[in-house]
Length: 441
Image (cartoon, rainbow, N blue to C red; front, top):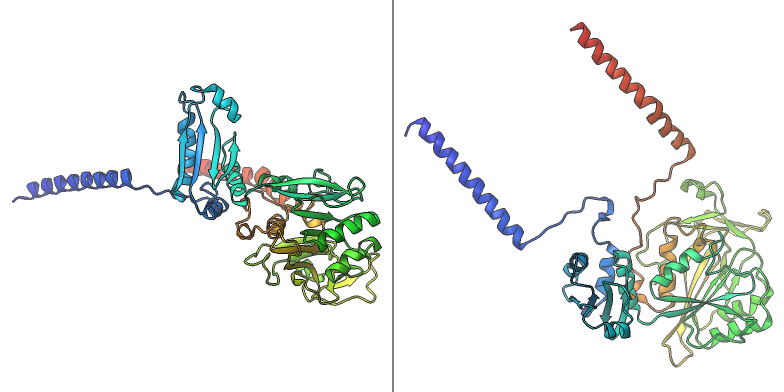
C-alpha cells in the first residue's frame, strides 16, 4: 500500500472516529445531564439553604400550579421546579387549567395565573410569585408547620419589631415572618397576662421601668412554661426586672465589656466585641461565622436552679469591664459570658421542654448591625432553638458572600486614581511607543 493510500485511509479513520465520538456524546447527553456552576459559592445553582430545606422534608411534596395552558407559563414553572425535583425526586408537579372551572377557582381563592399550592403532610402553602427565595421560604414554613406566634413586649421603650429606625428590629423580624413566624405586639397596659397560644415572648431592651403588673405577667409566664428571649443592654439592672432575673438565677453585671483585641479585627471602638469562637451549645453547634456585638453587658449565674444553663456567647480572655461613663476601676477580667441558653422540663403539660435565652446586647439584631458577619444567621438559630425547631438550626446562612464590596475611602481613592488617571496614561504611553516604533521602521 503506497503512502497516498495510507494517508487517505488515516483520514477516513479519523473522520469515522470523530463521528463516533459525536454520536457517543449525543447519546450520553440525551440520557444524562451535568451542570457545573463556577460562580463564587455556586450562587447561580440551587443554594445550600434550599438543599438543606429539601432535606428536612422527609416525605412527598405535591405542588399544584393553576396555570393556563396558553403561552409559556407552564414551561417556565416546570423549568424552575425541575431543579428541585432533581434534588428531591418525590416532589411532584401537576397543572390545573383555571379557566375550566372558574367557580372552583374562586372557592380556592386562586386569583393569579400560575399560582402554586404546596401540599405536605396535611399542611399547605400558597405562592403567587415563583422565585427560589419565595419557594424555599414556603417549604421552610411547611417544615415548621403552623405559624408560630412571637409576641414583642411594647410600651416601655423596647426595640420595635415593625419599625426601620436604626435601633429597631424591623429588618430581622420581616425575614422571620417569611419563614413562618408571626410577630404581634404585647402591651401590658392593655392586657394583664401573656395571651394563650403565644409561642415566644421577646423583651428587647426596655428603656423605661416595667410596671409591677408587666413584671408579674412575665414572671408568671416563665413560671408556667413560656419561652422567652430577653435582650438586655449595659447599665445597672432596672429594679423592675430583678424578679425576672431572680427567676432565672442570673445577674446582669454592672458596666460594659471592652476588648482591646478588637483592634485586631479592624474595630476602632473597644466596646465592639467580635466573636469567631463560641462555647459548645445547641445554638452554636457547627457555627463558625464572625458576629459583632456593640456595647455588651456581661452576665453571671448567681445560683443553681432547676434550669440547665449553657453559656453560648463569651468574650476573649483579654476583655475587661468598664463603667458606662468609661471608668475602668473595679473592672472584671475576661473571659466573661454575655449569652445564656436556659432549658428545663416544662411545667406546662402541653410542652415537653421550656427554653429561655438571655443576651447582654440587643444591637446585634438591630437594623444598624444585622448585616455584620453572621449576626443574622445567629439570630435565626436563636429563634429556631427557642421555638423548638431544632431541625432548622443547622441550615446554611442566607445570602452570597461576594455580592457586596466594602472598601474604605482610601481604597476608593486609589481605585479612582488608578482607573481615571493611571490606566489612561499607560494606554497613551503604550500607543505612543507603538507609533514611534512604526515610524522608525
